[in-house]
Structures are given as structure tokens and as C-alpha cells.
Length: 221
Image (cartoon, rainbow, N blue to C red; front, side, top):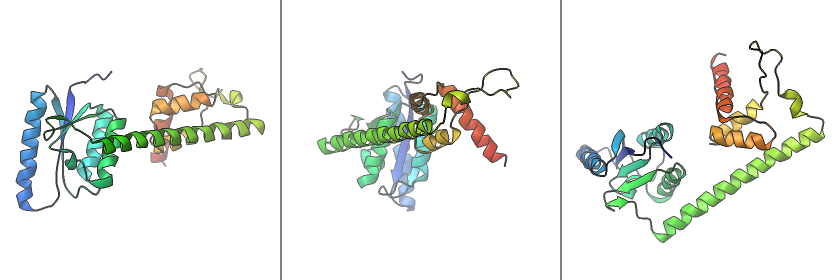
């Protein structure tokens, strides 16, 4: 369960840079903030774009998606679903919001966005395909580990670090694999589960720490 169940963001978009559209952005913002408040949500962020809905490379949209993930936002308010995007871009954004369990409220629908049967089916297909892609990737990792073991690799011999100044065992983990999984969009919890399947008993916190140490090491070079 989320800690901030009533947190929300507002997203406004117009398709052109015309000066007349600026007033439309402001109007969207004011109406959506008022609507969110009426439903009992506290708006934590407001994001805007003057950009075509067919393009997903929108600064405001990308910042919003990062913000939702980082702040664990549970609701998004838009004027209507086309503000999120059009065509394939719209479905891609809806899929990402579905993955983050973010409820989407539309003033046009006077509540949660109402998807038609085709949209619902496409989102279900995307979720299924993504899940099987993840399973296949994890299966490849496990197969690679089995082959390594067959060729003499013994992971149990790499679970301690005698040079640890704190006198505690420091688990040796496949840091490169952690980085690769992170680049593929895995959460630290998902990476932890994957490594456990490979025989590495490691917590989400440890995975996060090793990833951070790796990034800091790169920054220091």
C-alpha cells in the first residue's frame, strides 16, 4: 500500500507553440488543480508540454514519469486522454502508467479514464508480452549461470570478502548484471529476486547499495 495515497500530479499539453495556446495551458492547469482538490488529492507536481501528442520525447512528459516513479505518486489528472498522447505514443504512456499503478483521471470522463475494449485488450497484451520477455531474460541468466557452474565456477566461493575492514562478510555479486538489469528497467527488488534465483541471497537494499557504489566509482574516474 502506498504511503501517500492522495498524492497526484497534473499534466497539461497543447500541440503548438502558438501564443494563443498558452492560455489553454493555464486554463488546463487551473481546472485540473481544482478538480484534483475536489476529489481529495494533493497536487505534488504540475507538468506541461507544447508538443505533438504523437511524439513521446516530450520534456514535461518524461519529467512527469520520473517524478511519479520517484515520489510514488498514485494519481494523474489530465483534461482528456489525448493530452497524454495520440496513436502509439498514447498507448505507450498508458502502459507505463499502468505498470506504476497510477490512476488516471480525466475531466472529459468525469472520473477515471474510460478505455474502449480495444485499448484494454492492447494494454493486456503489452503486459503479457513484457512479462514473458522478462521471464525469457531471467531464464537466459539462469542458463548462463548453470553453464558457468558446469565449467567450474563456484558462486559459494565468492560470497565473502576477507579484505573487508569492518570484519563482516561482504557478498560478492555480479555487479555488471545488476547494472544491465537496471538499464533494462528492473527495480532493485526485481533484481534481488532474479539474483536469488541464481543462488545469491541478497536484499533489495544491498543491490541498491552496490549499484550506487558502481555509479559513484564511474563518476570518480
